[in-house]
Image (cartoon, rainbow, N blue to C red):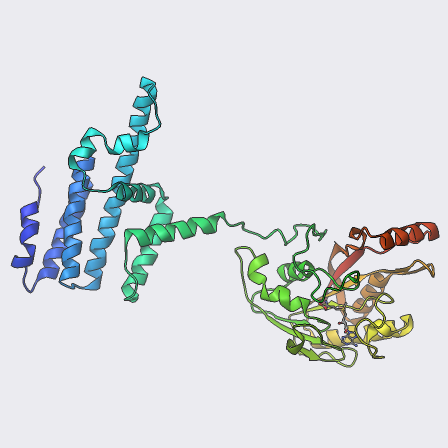
Length: 422
Ligand SMILES: C[S@@+](CC[C@H](N)C(=O)[O-])C[C@H]1O[C@@H](n2cnc3c(N)ncnc32)[C@H](O)[C@@H]1O
């Protein structure tokens, strides 16, 4: 094979190409591409690498056009990938030989690198060879995507250089992304939203007091299933702002599909560490925002939380059943008044059972009737444990015995009812 240029010719490039270095380097790069196509052995490929490496150095030294510099670097990296491929093939065939000869195979890699042929022409360090092999082991698609991205970045950003190390780093990052689970385990695949460990427990934890607070995971699942990117979401009974904590941490539970939406919070009695983000508002009077895409309401559980949030008479937690129902009716109408057809509204509600009084109130059914008469239809339903039974305290055992004796079950489930505006 006749070489279109020799080592010697490369050596004189700086002196002969005064004024027109760019054209000459471009021409030499084209020739190198042709040479690479014809190169079959490690030594031939390595020779082309040496020439391109010299061209790359020249293009930088003479500060040639950025594109020419990048052409040279890109070609050099591509040759390194090719060298890695050849080396890997050699390793494989040597491995085969070794297996055949039933020899000790512990040093296959370096044996092959140091094999007679390679040693004869070796100008690379062990570290460089291993980089080339890493380049070679990357899939064609990933390598092409990364080299294109980094080249584009290097072309527009002076701070970024195209380099073998940079390419390998980007490849590692992409591979790491691939290993990240597509979806978070916090998001449940079925309508049974029970969480073995609670990641977003109640914010103002007080020992022994866990009534009325849903695990934040319920908000995460509602957002996942019912909120689209860019939506305006309103939580009009946000209390201590658990909803905000979950919203803020969306990169934790959105897996590889993180997206943005807007969240506005209101409550009759804002409290807790997110208090300043929650606007005081009585939901029985009106809905505080127009055209919300999605409303999520964690209602005060009738009869279970009296005086827990405030001592205000307009606090639903403090109302008798009749007033509570009237207040919920007003709330369902207020939601319907501001939502357009097709928009969703979720109400999180457990049923109420009073063991001492022998009382069972089917709150979820009442909510459904109210929302349907306000102009919604039931769109979806999920269930989640309130984890009351998880507290294996003496008090819990006493309550359980009481419930069994009075033949009134305790309520452990919250229903998550989602309505669609007609
Ligand atoms: C079950 S709690 C919501 C707790 C909430 N998920 C949190 O993270 O703290 C019900 C909330 O409804 C609020 N509330 C009661 N009556 C209200 C009314 N008339 N208007 C607006 N909010 C009300 C209470 O202050 C309470 O914060």
